[in-house]
Picture 1 (cartoon, helix red, strand yellow):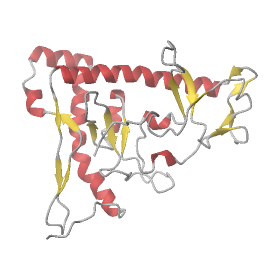
Picture 2 (picture 1 turned 60 degrees about the vertical axis):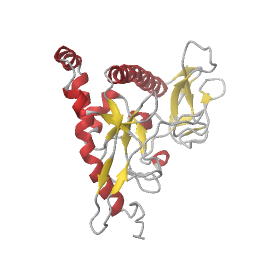
Picture 3 (picture 1 turned 30 degrees about the horizontal axis):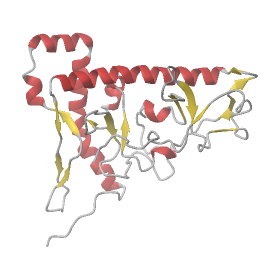
Picture 4 (picture 1 turned 135 degrees about the vertical axis):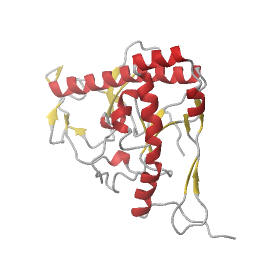
Length: 256
């Protein structure tokens, strides 16, 4: 149900090109009230700093595998996002993860051995280009304030990613992540729908964590993040209900 992106390119991105004043001197960037890149995406990566806001809107879970990633579940079934329509218009007043808000930009290493990250963009996006009606990306050979702002946003995202990795490492250190499972009973359907394929914090193990460790987590702000994750799991049924309301609920298998 919830897995970290496995493609060579990051989730949402069809291609990547480094932004530079030589090739993109006349490029402009436009704003949009639609996010078509969210259509069909049921799980979007989160940073831990987003947990307090995201937990009001989505279940927060962790992907499976040796390197878990926090995910906001915008749908419970593959290919379903219950928060946008088919054109990417938001159906609810909802928090949008920073991972999605930075698109079509991101920081990337241009070569495997590069020490620095460079600002790149997805050239397949219609949000950038010479013929786009929007804000210029360069003034001569210098980035404009709009470009500097996006660079800062992407840098902040990368820094938040390091803090997220430290948070995950702490959960793994204390063996707190377990395979999750939720059963949702739909009215008029005999068998519940069972969702698996994600990880959650084991509340029983959390209760057994030493007091000095918990005090440290509380002082560092880690403990409230754990509880934000746990509280958010109650939203599984809300997201499921939205899917059903939109006619995107899971198929009911007739009884044999």
